[in-house]
Length: 103
Image (cartoon, helix red, strand yellow):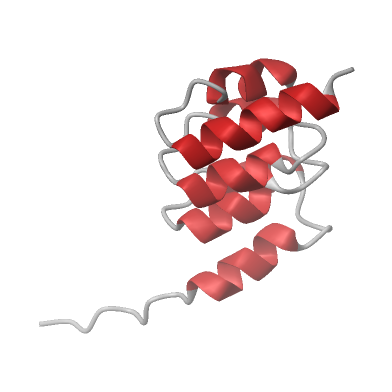
């Protein structure tokens, strides 16, 4: 039986997702990463493509959604959708963002 390759450490992928030299389609691959910490790193990036921000608004992990709500470039449509989220923390953050961020 062949040995499995060593698992990549998620912190390496987080660092790569935060690397300013990683942009465009390379960044998009991290937006669909299996680890929510990596997706959260992408959601927090100001240079994250708008399409990825909208897509990340449907992420099931609250850590990703909190990072998304902290990103000033997150479209108001994504924030409005999160205002109705079932998680009260996420919905409260989204409502607060709507009150303060889009005047």
